[in-house]
Length: 600
Ligand code: ADP
Ligand code: MG
Image (cartoon, rainbow, N blue to C red; front, side, top):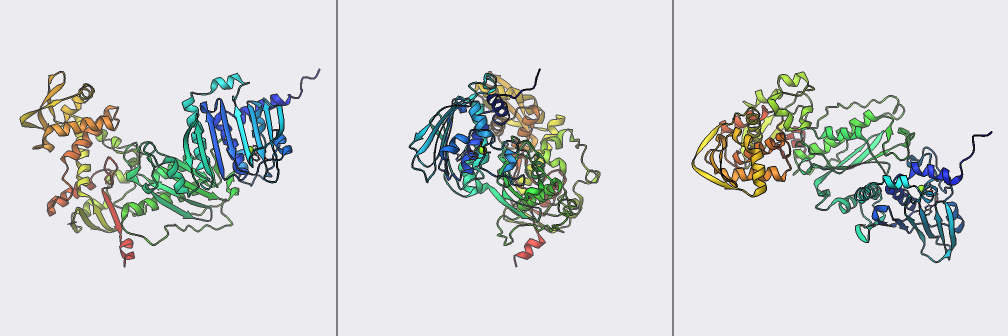
């Protein structure tokens, strides 16, 4: 007896559907990509109940003939000729012409479509692969496809859908990936009759701003710098956030040849380029577009995955890192100077041995500031931020021995003799590499912060008795917070005694803040801990240390004498991380000799 038999079409389609259409978001992606393939200039997306009840895509593309409208829902029906080389095939490899067949197997689909040359359009209705209606209709040029009750006949899948909130987020994410690379197509996204996004035609930057430039997302393109690098292997361009505008939740997007991709390894390259520039927990936002010969991409990857493998990832890693560094370096060094260079790094790469034998020589520690035993040593631990740097003063294992011995090489020795002067708010110091610009208040914040962190770790704060005790009255929620912080506040030098259920008397203050009023300092600490979301003891300590450092540091613009300047600079360079303050502000910046000479 035969035990092998062919699956009925509808079953086969359901199986295929399981792979192509996992959730409303994957359905939306297929529909919108079809509209783009059809040359649409305007696409409307209407969603109900996060796609559970309705997913509708209306386009003004080329539309379909009566015959095509029917064929489109057959498996392997496709009007698109593709080669493996064709980058478009990347996403649908192995599923050519299967999207609509898969969708109609697991939903109730109604479509109207018309080509410009036809007078009447076609309406077709399919429920779970069965055509229930096909007739002529009058409709505008383009295609209007309505997918209702997704997975109505696959209860298991329906059950596995997450909350509406999660599925809507997935839909939006999928939508961003597409909308970001098609700024020349107008989109509208409507959910439950509410217009969530209205994206007019514009430039890439305008599209980014239109999607993310709101207070909630907080991504404004004016906070970005351009990157731009052309090599024989790859061209990389895009926008990376200025370090000072980084946030804890970042928008990070890579695109290759007009397609979104995830790439953890390249993400690392970008993060490495920001080493030491971001405060703890902060992430760089970026939008980076790669253009590469499709031959250099491994197309043999699952179509629904967004990971893409490149033939020469290590080389691209370095080119990417160098490119981001260059952009950031230029920005942090002298934002006021208008460079007339294009900013591209030329990395010649012989065409013939491109993939087999990469000969790009980029030092992974490439630093636009300087590379040899510099006052800007690249310290891997800087990425980890301040917390780990000071905790018990133990250094992370992976720190290179040479840096362990003298973390700041040249600078400490030289800073005693190097010409150092004050001009306006800033200090200037001549060094081997150029003129170093130092922000004295921020430098002082760094120095004090390190001190406070260490004192907190060892409960060694020094206390100065207040002549006139002050009283701090707190709200209910502040009281809870204050109780949590009390041991650390005491160990750093505050003397506090509970007066009543909602008040403390303050009798002592950390000696670095002597002569200041204690109350505003304490209020600032409570405010910062609450607002900056410090949840762990280490995070409270960071906020306490930072608030105290900011309260105790010299004011901006304070005149300093020679000894004060020398002392500050020396202490600053003795720190393991001194380029940025713990809250991410630039402390030192270098204007290289080369940049100075460019001005003449
Ligand atoms: P594929 O996109 O891989 O060809 P699909 O199942 O997604 O497979 O679509 C099948 C065919 O239906 C397409 O090749 C195209 O000819 C036609 N089609 C689908 N959507 C549209 C649309 N919005 N406008 C015009 N034609 C479309
Ligand atoms: Mg398709």
